[in-house]
Length: 523
Image 1 (tube, rainbow, N blue to C red):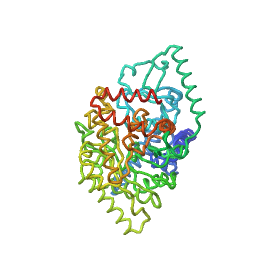
Image 2: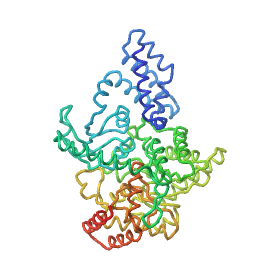
Image 3: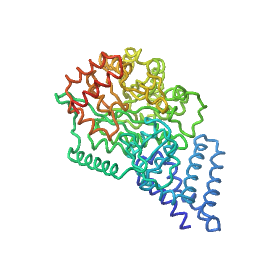
Image 4: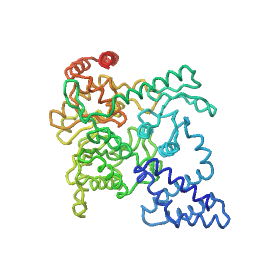
């Protein structure tokens, strides 16, 4: 009995302590089951009758899984998947968890691929760093690792999987380098660099409440939020709001879709964490490299161009509508903004907006408190939108330029394919001119426009963005101080001059030279 309870409570404690509010959605069902005295009591009774702890877990879980699976209610049937996931985790902890934890703590883990739930588990065990030998640097794993503050390098080097345990590795996640059996001098130099960086960051203190260029132009710095734990960091760093909340990450790490009420609870905490500041929800953006394991999407030859994002939501309104209702209910009294990802046509945007309006009408009829008039916007990620941007500017309340996907689609580069990584060039003239067209249309029609992709936190692109009229950037909280300092070194006049030079060039190599020269002069 004591062994079973200790193991179960240990899992519960570690998850709750490490992820705090985030666990309320990601592992909500697991924690409720672990607190259920009947569920735990059945295991204890079996152990006292002579069963081993793993056998007791299996027998008890099978009973409840069969019971859930036969229920007429579809939501209850989905809970069978949650219980299967929990059962695997309990068995893992009972049979090999202690040994695995001793390997993860203060270690660098090398894996072919990882699920988000694996990353959360390793983070709770104190892993020092991760090397993944597949996937792209903008995948959901990389995004989640940033929020968990785990150094991560994704590298096309499967030979690393054959390294023996306890091999010494130096992981430089900033530059994407992995050094096997590094020389003592390399280690010493790296440690000296890290000490200097920590000292510099300490000397520079916290962020200022407003971000200004050297000549006084104000730039709004917003935060990209992946987990609720990011909100406190963003608030402490004086972020002016949430420019992008990626609602799909809690979906991805679960074993079944969260209910409307489960989503409402987390969304409300998000809103309460940013009082008086705008909060932008991106609706579910799954598919491609962000497909939950439990989602039965047919295998597609090119999932990045398949049923994903808004296409999935409009096809699966049983998922889309509960999410919209949860957002609207959570945003009472808030400056709420809802945006749709991967929009490709006016009809698609209008259809998604119509579903949102229907949700508002339904909540009104049900007399449930909700936000009656959120701003409705869209991500700009496809070339098709750029060509129709003036028409979109008459329909949408705001734009958020998602540079990661925009680059991928303009340049026909799969951003998770290492073989074509060299063709993923953010400063390609077609990409920069497309962004300029979007900004021009937004300004002409009085629409807010921000950049929320990875380009937004890269210092060398900041003068271009400011020079073409961007006045709002949304970045992961860890980058906020660095971006604010970089903005403070720029002048609007100098940024506009550089932007004009860049837009006049037709070669990416020439643009790169201009960007590097400016960065060297003003860095």
